[in-house]
Length: 281
Ligand code: OGA
Ligand code: MN
Image (tube, rainbow, N blue to C red; front, side, top):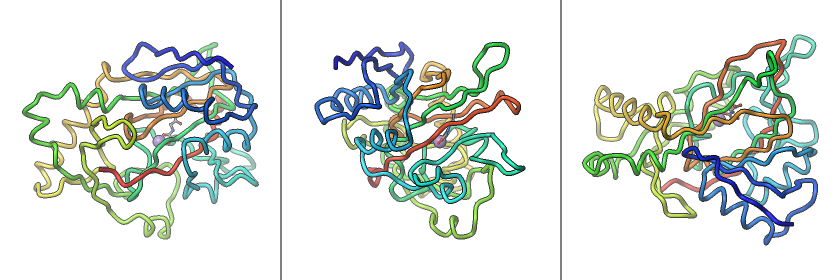
């Protein structure tokens, strides 16, 4: 199998050609895929036709899988590692999380050990007048760090943010039990990538509710300034989904946001897997 990696040309993302995920990968086959994710923060594999088991098997190459707190309601039966992102309603009941991740964020920053990698597989993509809707934006937070003036880098290099599960508005109700599982945590707002050593900003509106040692107005002003800097158009790759896309991203390197520009009867159905990560440093 010969693998071809083509960068998107935007600040993040590369498309990988020559991989068929219905066939197993050995470690030699997986190495260039991991390398592309390390280099570009987001990888895109088009035209895949996979089962939940095949998505889980591919995801496991990146590490141990997390079972999302939402999977209790929105899992695929027999595959709790898959969590359904969808606006489809059946018998009056939602089948998945609708409007997941509508604001810029990085997955599970509210956890002591946030997600390392998240993967989505596009089963149904909303289309209107022949145009795909419901895209996903990815912002390169490492490039955003590199672009900060030295004085700002020096000012924030050692700061810690407070990340709170309750900070973000969620589209489906969250139980007291889920909230209790994720008490507020502190993470460095400038993270060092566990594999590459590259530094990147790690801060977002809503999820990050304070900065250790700063009063609230000062902290909120800094959170907003840095969060807005990360998602400037120069740092963003905008993914337009096609059915069969497998997209995986590195939650240390990039932030992402779902574009909510569609609604039923346009249906969107993605399968998500989540790879556990380390304690940020
Ligand atoms: C997620 C998420 C974005 C999307 O699943 O973590 O933010 O476009 N999804 O569905
Ligand atoms: Mn997300």
